[in-house]
Image 1 (cartoon, one colour):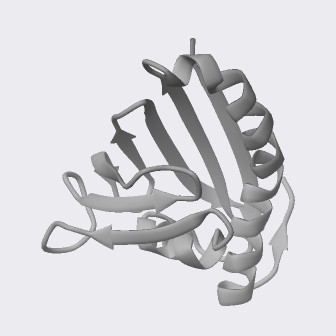
Image 2 (image 1 turned 60 degrees about the vertical axis):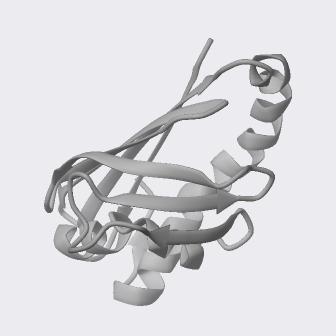
Length: 149
């Protein structure tokens, strides 16, 4: 039992600007302040493959997130384990109006969380509809006008 959530949008900035901002998980504190409560980068050096973060979202324990693939300025993949395992992938490509951002989040419940997963999905769907819009608005404020895709 898993769930795959997808979000796509176009933003008027360069793909490099979108990648630099979105690929650093610490910036989620800026675009998702209602759900993202803390993010700390725990590895040294620039963000890239092998980068690890400790992050906490509303209603969750602190989670370690590791970047398992990183191809600047095009895509990255992240993984976190625990009762709610997740696999995240984001791809950024050039678009006539700036940059196209395509993301996928796979959620895989384990243990007790399998029982509450359907309720969790109901709550998550509310956020799913606004998450991409929040990212887009934040990028728009930083780099220019955003346009829906």
